[in-house]
Length: 336
Ligand code: UT7
Image 1 (tube, rainbow, N blue to C red):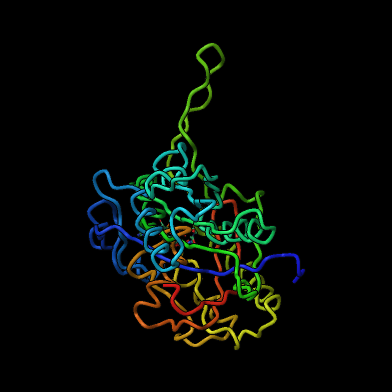
Image 2: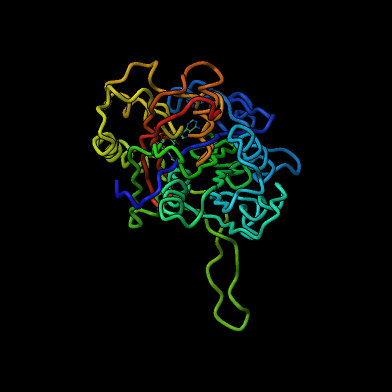
């Protein structure tokens, strides 16, 4: 690494999911489906969704508080908030600004959202790495939070079975000991296949001009195309992430993949030749929580004793855009 680039330490990670559980059996009240169909195709049994006025900001705030608590970094020392959100409650004010307000961060620091859908946390980590590496900011709060359940079409059984709501957060800081927790990190996109997953914003043309076609503001997904794209692209990509880390796949302790489909997770597992113990999957209980899925899997994995800290992990995400990203990270003791 260039000696002028400052190394990054992951100081704390947290998550929050809503209390309300919707099972596959519950979904049979909405459309013709079955627990067996959903579980076999996706590995999902249930998901958590927001209820009443609860939203992604509430979840993001709790995740951020958890991550800050682990980091020992004070709220007033945070000098940038980046939120990765593709299904926020409002387009603006940004989710990051609402987190800044909710945490009562006293300083006028920058706070902004970035949209990279389910790859969002890895994208945000790359941006934070650039900021910390250059010395521009020192302590950055990353929040990945979505309330997908408000934006899916609950009449579309091909899409609404997959998503759940949740939030993850990560506090990153300059590593004073000189040890960089990012062993490799890369982000990619292919906008030419953007229509595989899209969500319009509602709106009409000015009444003085020709009207535009009416759009619906729901999540649309060509599931089979996404599936094919991911299983043909991701295995080679993760090979590259491993190679760039300077470690071998065997030397990396865990795979913490985006939780989108158990069969996609297994495709990555098989490329890495990992035993089940090295692969963190909790999709069964949360479905696809977009950018939050990786931090939720990480923290819950530690809490359940599946992940031992003082280890390394390969993180890999993909989503609308299409975007994808991967990172090999050092997971220090005490981060969650
Ligand atoms: O982070 C975002 C990333 N997104 C993903 O990773 C999604 C990746 N894709 C997938 O996970 C899968 O494509 C799905 C699980 C979404 C769908 O599985 P599939 O095997 O690709 O099913 P399909 O969409 O090709 O549909 C097969 C059949 C269809 O019936 P016909 O036309 O063959 O009669 C669907 O109408 O299954 C039917 N179907 C269902 N049946 C029962 C679709 N959804 C359901 C359902 N229950 N929920």
